[in-house]
Length: 105
Image (cartoon, rainbow, N blue to C red; front, side, top):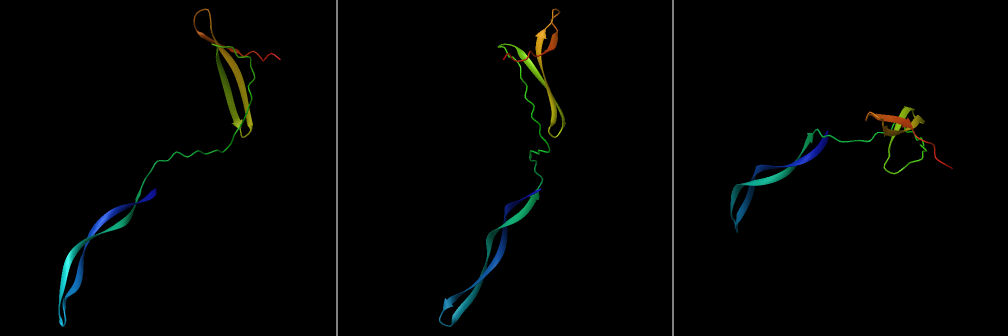
C-alpha cells in the first residue's frame, strides 16, 4: 500500500464587514477552497531479494558458430556446480549434448 494525495475542493462561507465611519455592514459569500486529502492504494513493485549467491567458473575451449549450454546447479548459499555442454546435431538431425572440451593451455 502507498499513500498519495488527491486535490479536493470544498465550499466555505466567508464573512466580512464593509463600510465607513460608524456605518458597517456584514456580508458573506461562498468561496471554493482546495485541500490535499491522503488516500491509499495497492501498488505492484518488483523487489530484488538476494538470500544467497554462488559463483562457479566454467572453462572450455569455445569455437565460433558453436552452441554451448551451461547447466548450473544451485545447491545452497556458496554451494553450486556448473557443467558445460556443446550442442551438436546427430546423424538423424536431433540435438545431442556432449561435454565441452577443456581449454588448451
